[in-house]
Image (cartoon, rainbow over all chains, first blue to last red; front, side, top):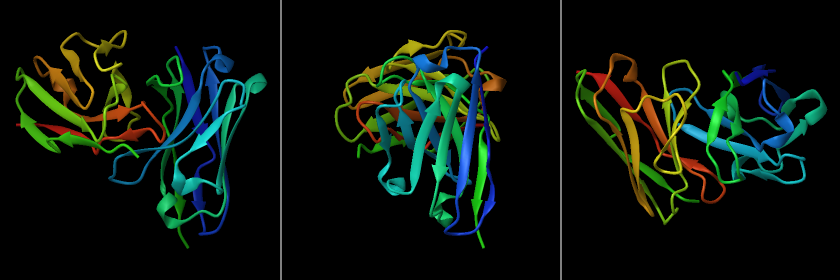
Length: 120
Length: 107
């Protein structure tokens, strides 16, 4: 079955950086759009960023533009999220998710999430 | 950004009850609407995509309907494993946005 495993979360001070990774397996990674979604403690889901199959197109929610960078390595079946200039409001569980088919399709598989805590 | 509003925010129901959750979009999103189920401490799971298509392996007691701005998720006969939070999501235009969630609790 499709597997997505996030890593790289942790405690970081405001203004710091973290790089999240998502290791994909049991599907053709390079054939799917991939997304990052986050969920602050006790809150709803917020889409963060996505990236096209070949990495040529990327989109971000306004609140992370200029601070976060999404990337992928299809040879390594891996998705990344470089997070710079972190703020307290970035504290959340970060999930990677696979897009089911087309650009406007649903997220059919999700990783278990990795917790990012931004605090001094 | 397209605002997604779910109602109710929470509900209490008994096993065997028919449950309906609604999701309203701030503008027309055609049928680009998905429903997810999330249990505490776990990742969301896709139930319904394209407003009314059931993901493979999801029990047939779950169904979705609607188009444009108004959508519903129906659980025809609530089972113990269905107590969870349900989220709607639009993928009509970025930024993709989610509803605030509907928590289904045991009565």
